[in-house]
Image: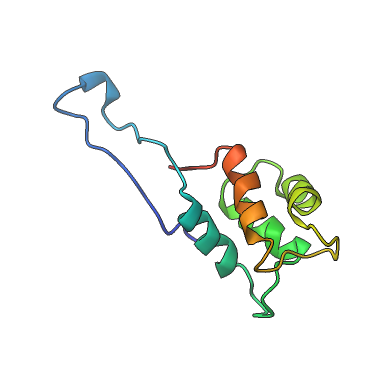
Length: 103
């Protein structure tokens, strides 16, 4: 899946050394929420560990399995092994702390 939000800045005129470099911008809460929701492939309203792993992989995580495991530990308040709509805010807060950026 391609990343839905791409941000680049043309700095040719002001900084010749920065030519061809992309500006990394942190995802917003709304962007992360939309990204996570898009990985609910079975449409049951919950994010499974596999769906979380795929979402973190698309965000550029170097260890998406580990990140999904830790995200469940942090965000799954009822410990049912999946993230509900009510727990999505906890998941987004967790992801924001890890500084994923739009490249």
